[in-house]
Image (tube, rainbow, N blue to C red):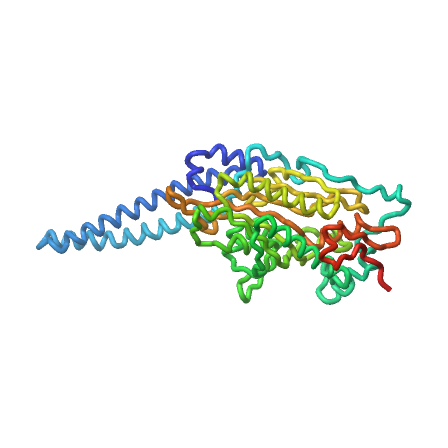
Length: 424
């Protein structure tokens, strides 16, 4: 949620931000009008209520005709006060409804454009030349079947399309990734958390996942709970309706949880293998901080993602996402795209977003400073989305005989193994 003061002090900046996102500029004008009506309605109600209280005191002292006149006025005011209170509540509800649909204003220097207008910030590592090594690379599903690591057929049998089993070496590989990610996160000062994967509507709404992203969310109507698409949701709501001491910030959390996504609108895309699935596990970084420190800490989270990917010896690029491709809550986002040899292109594997005070306002999370209480900032970042990282590891480190070399950083978490080997 944006700071309501911006509607009165920086409306043109909000209009420019909406235009940059490709969203309705008229929403800003609607909000300004709704804000004026809301404030006027509050003043009207409070004025009538004050008069009602004052007359109530006068009635007790009045006599005769004066008292009868005051009583009549009291009865008249009673109806007016109720009507004014209802009008104020309606105006407030309309304002709140519009505010929930207003995205976080993007930063002025974010690249403009849509999904394909990102900026490549940096490139790391060099993709292998498999032709020079004398063999054609297998894709991750063929490798997964050779290794007895991925079973798509039984995943579909048990749960349907875009589900899978990780078996044997595949399951061990994910557990190794989880342990490596958590070990690094702990080293960097994060507190490990195992958050719930089911959350209330307030958590989804507060993090901005019930607006434009609602079509990708699984909902359990009987319980009115949602399956999270990322542990960002539970980690953001962890301190909802709380006031944190400013000197306790920043607070760094690393959550591991299953993630569920309907992948609505992705029909026909990435149907082979485990790149785009309905369920996967993920280690997510989440930070509560002072707004003045948010930009620096956002770039710090990006450095952690780069460190993790580099430790797995994978070629990747860092992209800054364009304004029209940002989610509701992000004012700036960086993605890391890893190289997939059999697709001959980089694909998204991590992202990190600076949500400024947007989520904190929606979730009523504040910090206490010497000047009083004020909203804090939140930042999130993927450290390891398991299925996509497994794809990159299998394809980039495969050998001609179908085995897969284990990066040195992962070996301590796989009992020292240097290779995953074909089975049967």
